[in-house]
Length: 382
Image: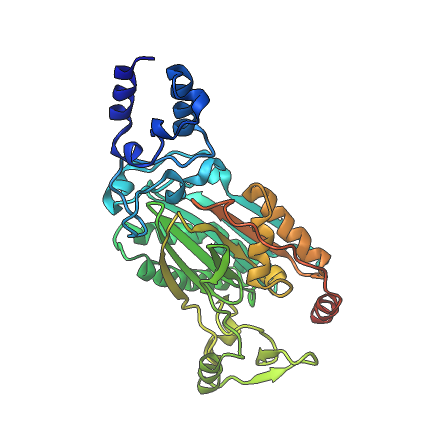
């Protein structure tokens, strides 16, 4: 290899390579100082080895650190999930945004010890730029959860065509679905499920970077960022002061069961839901609380949507740690639902795991079996 060829290699590799210390022939040990071919081989391996640090010529600086940006610091799946880059959003937002494919999303739903599974979930490509993820936990029958699974996406899609603010879209969609369900059950009052209800937790991902979540009830959404669980929803229960005050002002009352758990009018363990029309005049509402998050694929590993069959028995960080031990989201979803049953949950357990750019970077600690956890769970569903 001639010196001219080596110079051309440096020029083609870009300015970062020259500054990175990869090509410093003066540092070769004596056996290699006079062997040009071996020097080139060593340089080539340093430049292209997967374990080495590979610098990019891009001007993107997602963390505003001012340091040269490596492919690994972008968090582009880090060779763990092979997905392409979304070019238009990447240009628009000024950072590389990996595509989230539905085929990589993990989903699982187990019946537990119940007679039927009243949980429902859905994952879809709602529009060209928006992905749709939702879990619904029915109670008093599956009718309300079935209705949400079938129609929630359609209401959201119709509203998105006229409104760009996804938080406003979700709030309006939840209220419209609730009204449509009331009409449906009134028309079909001769069938079971007139007093059925459902939680609803819906997440929309636009352009691979804008995540908006809306929720009523006690199903949850959680984002794993830098290996830590960040709750995107807050349960709507009578334990919350603001929720309890609304119930009381509307004429409802709060009672506690033998385990010390509060219920609205001795019937419902949540203060917001789709359906439950016999309690709508008592302060139970269908208006969701929403949250908008801008994803940082260099730090964000996944989104998890879960029903209370999992939430009651495992806290958010435990869920985060277990998922981080898994090789892919489908394995993670199955493992979480299985683990909830092993810990003593008798309820339906449903989970959706959506991988992001930092998937696989953070390994969580093992969770341990808890006898007290199992004992408490068995009392809840008695």
